[in-house]
Amino acid sequence: MSKFFSNKFASLTPYTPGEQPRDMQYVKLNTNESPFPPSPAVAAAVAAESGKLQLYSDPESTALRAKLAEVYGVKPSQVIVSNGSDEVLNFAFMAFADEKSPLAFPDISYGFYPVFAELNHIPYTPIPLKADFSIDPKDYMGVGKTVVIANPNAPTGMCLPLTDIENILKSNPHNVVIIDEAYVDFGGESAVKLVDSYENLLVVQTFSKSRSMAGARLGFAIGNDKLIADLNTIRHSTNPYNVNRMTEFAGVAALEENHYYLQNAKTIMANRAFTVEQLEKLGFTVLPSKANFVFAKSDRVAGEKLYKELKARGVLVRHFTKERISPYVRITIGTRSQMEILIEKIKEIIGV
Ligand SMILES: *Cc1c(COP(=O)(O)O)cnc(C)c1O
Image (cartoon, rainbow, N blue to C red; front, side):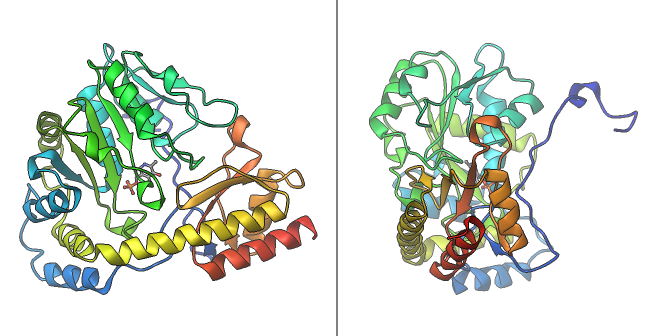
């Protein structure tokens, strides 16, 4: 730390992204990326826009917001786009949470939530998941805090039914409830259909997972027009050109090819079923996942050891050291052949 670093941030522990090693080609199942490339129309859109890079991007991302509004059945004024959904999550924390409306989120969830809370000096309460790793909706009913729930949750992959989300929304009318749907396209049910009924609902999604665009950095949020206007106040005070022109039109092209991504999501769900079945045959406990990853543990090998042994064999998965989840590894669902390699290496490691 330099002597110039502000005291405001001296105690900040930044988010640790999953490893992106360059030393060799791994079977990469550690950061929940899609194993499928974007549709060819996306590359064509990027190429077309790259010839116009001397010009700023549209600060309102008009074309992309119109397309998102059409696909999600809302008005463009109910949509904001961002540089990855991480950015709009940060904007939402800045806009809707403070000492009077502190944050509440599960103790085991996306690692960025506490980081954004600390960055913005917002008090937060981690709420323990139940013994089975599910979220107890009662813990959030009437809490009078800004609620953040990843649905499906990460790294468990488990879902909360929309009826529970509605009860949380109804019982916290003076607070915003942020539903992070990064993984919703892999079998979950989206809360977008509720945005006209609850003025306190903000739904956040990303192009990074089901839409094969993690490297383009594109996220969005859908909610009541007034919430979106507040988020735009923060965005315009930070970076009005937050989405570059190549990414904006890559997003439009991806939405025009929605069927391609829906088909890929179906393939991933089938590969997930295959992986769960194989892991369970090997005696693993696998949490019920509606995401493009599974969270699994074995009595025969500790989580950290499994992660290391797989890495030594060219397969990357994610391990978290937090005590309650340290027996587990999080495995991204890739292609069928990637999952077959994973299972083969696990058999080698546990000696069956
Ligand atoms: C991956 C992920 C995100 C966002 O990723 P971006 O690439 O910034 O869009 C947000 N929330 C959760 C729970 C995630 O797993």
